[in-house]
Length: 511
Image (cartoon, rainbow, N blue to C red; front, side, top):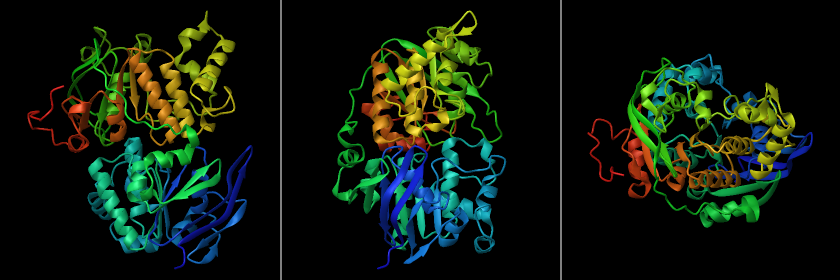
C-alpha cells in the first residue's frame, strides 16, 4: 500500500536554532499517528511544513506516492490536508461561520450548501457547542480551539492534523471525538495527533514518533507502551511522572465567594448565578468545566479585571474586596495566572525583566525610580529556579515557547508568596517536563499555606492536584466535594450540567 504522506530528510534552520534536523516520517492511509516531544522539540515547525506555512530548507514531501511542493495552506487544503493550530488563526471581528468560510473553496461551499446548518449539525455530532453566529472576539480560548476543530471537520480531509484537540472537552466528549476519529480512520483518513496527554496517545494512536532537539529519537506502538515509558522517550531520565500526590485538608478560610450573581458583560457571555465557595489555607480547590460556561467571567470578577462592584460577595481574610482594583487586591496577597499567556499573562514585546516588574513594582521601585539591577537579578533567579529556556532576562516574552513562558509566569506569581493564587489552565499545551515543574510549584505553594483556586478543562490534572473539586456549567457551580469522594464520571456529568435544578441532591456531595 502506498503511504498517504512521507517526509524525507526534512530540515529547517532558523537563526540560532536547528528546528528540524533530517526528519523522516511515514503515515499510511487510516493511520492515527502521534507526534510527540517537549515544547521546542520541533513538532510545530514540522506540521507547519506539512501544512504549507513553513518551507523546509531541504527534504522532500511525498503525497499519495508523488512528490509535491506545499507552498501555502491553500495548496495543502486542495490536497486534502486540514490542520488545527495550537495558536489560533482566527479573525476576531468575524463570526464563526465567516471564519470557516474563508478556508473553503467555492467548490467546497457549493458541496456543503448551507454552511451554518452544517456547523450546527457537526457541532451536535461532536458535542463541540459551536454557535456559527457568534463573533470570535467574544469567545474564550477553549471556544476558539473548538472553532479551529470545526473548520477542519467541514472539509473532506485525507489527512487531519490535530494539535491538543481534547483540552477543552469533557470526558464524555473526548470519548465521542475518539469514536469519530476511529470512524475517519476506518474510512481511510490519516490523522496526525499531537497531545501531551499521553494516556490519550496510548488509547487511540497506532504509531508514535518522538522528537527531541529537532530529531527523531524514537518510534513506538503506543498501545504496547505506558504513559511513563513514552514520557521517558520524550524527555529522557528527567521524565519523573506525576504519580499522584497526597490530598490535604485546608485549615482556616482565606477567601470566600458569597452568593455571587452577575449578568454577562458581553452579548454572548455567561451570567454567574448565585456562586458560593471558600478557599482554605493549605488546599487546592479545582473547578472543572467546558470552556464558555462562566469560568472567564468568574476569573475576571475575582481578579479585578472586571471592575464592577461586588463588594460583599468577595471576602479576603474577613475584608470585602469586591470593590477594589486588581492592583489593590494584589497588595492584599492575591496573585493571578490567566489562561492567555501572551497579552494577559505577559506583554509579548517586553523583556522578561520588564514583565517581572509589572507585578512586582512595590519591591523594585524606590522613590519613583526603578531599581533595574535588582529586578534583573531577581528575573535571573526566576529563570534558573524554574528552568526557563530562553536567552536570558532580556529575552522578549514572545520569543519563548508556550511551556517556558508558562513556567516563567507561574514562577513570577508564586514568587510573590501570595496568600491566594487564582490560576487558570496552568499546563494547557505544555510538555510533560514543564507540566511536572508547574505541578510541583503549585503543590509547594499549597504546602506553604497558600489557598489556590485552580480552574482547568483538563479533568485528569484536577484529579491529580485538587484537594476538593467542583464543576461549573452555564454559570452555575456544582456542589464542592472532596476529590477522593468523587470520580471522573460524576465530575464529567456535572460539567454537562446534570446538577442544575436538582436541589443539589447528590451522593457524595458533602465535603
